[in-house]
Image 1 (cartoon, rainbow, N blue to C red):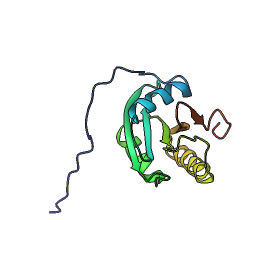
Image 2: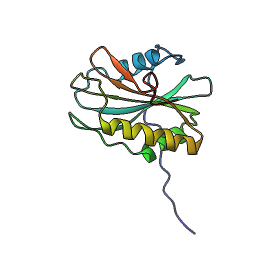
Image 3: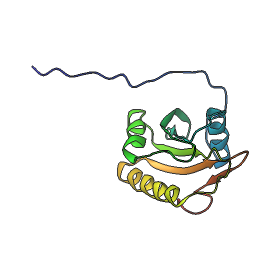
Length: 144
């Protein structure tokens, strides 16, 4: 007989009275800004959405340094698959306050869109949060 370890996935449940259905990049930015309020390092999170683009969960993929965080599609989509998400919105903050994307941000976005396409999980947007502003890859044409 083979013994296996059973791993619990749900981290925590918390009350949420904010925006439930994501209709615009602005809606997603508001939700993510509330979630990341007060953090001093770069965080990469994903909003996990159902078929009606309602938030099922928010998952922290990685926490980096002041200037970077490491993101791999495997970690992003593992959470999406477990949460039975039909779509995701990737979000990370720039603690510097400047939401202009780096070349690495563009590379990560392309990799996520490609991986999501293979898995049947749509990447609706990738947002970079700055101070009271955000950058949307979809609004700038990097995601169709």
